[in-house]
Length: 430
Image (cartoon, rainbow, N blue to C red; front, top):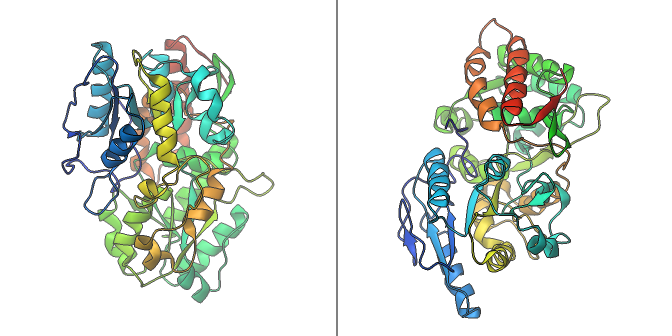
């Protein structure tokens, strides 16, 4: 099965070689007992970060009747998701696993997940509608959101002030700011050229979601909309004017950030540790702003690269697993140290000291949490996201060419509609 190559949180936050943990850290962690609450995750276990395994130990001490085992899994995203599906099919899957929010609907559609609507109902007042929509499919709930991940504009406030530009509230203001910055050799942002998820989130933010659920079996496909055509053309013009720098990894743009050539970054909260690494602590003060919509459109906050806790088919203790997931949400340091924002309304959520050199006195975590609570709940990646992301790859090479990226959108939309039909689902939109 071809899968979207999407990090569970963001590049640099995940690792492919994890430190030993108190319970287990292995490519395939076997369940302990039939009724065990085995939890798989792929969050960074770098030295100095709070341990989820220790949190699991503490939970079990407070709940002695629960046989809880937390496993850090070392594998690429594609391999990890295949492991999860294979383990569930063999009746040996974990009770709960962290997965990319982009994969939830696909896993639910394929019958890998367990319907836990009755157990999740008690948490609906704690988690906002946007994050909760990421763990729902066809009216059923399959877990709890782990982190809220709004797409935002991070900007070097010192560099922007020196250029006499302000955070934009409309798209025309963003274009004007980009032009001013470019006149002094600076780029307003980098763009992850191969990441279809980034482009889809940008389209959502500017007013044209790629997928919007109409009902349980029908999705409106907006990939070929007028708004998406305009966005693609605008972005390609900005690339040509050197207002945006194309990137393939953080390493590919490290020198551009370090030198101050790139003074903004459109991305997710999980990018903060990587942004700090490429910018250099204490050299700049970065703030955040929402992505401006096209003029005349209402502002939208899309989700980008978030992850979810989902309950696997065959789990014998879904209630306890959800309880553990919810308790982790109440320990914000477990996530904020990793640049992630708890999806619930955790108290005392503040910017960790490790990020202070990047953001100064800005309580950026609090601000990101506020944006996360306004994430739109009427857009969806749909259960055929993998097929769409794979079909996008050839278009990703066109940004710096003379061929308009927008000319590839009709074929991409057709792929989405065909994939929905092949899955027994329906589509609307051109």
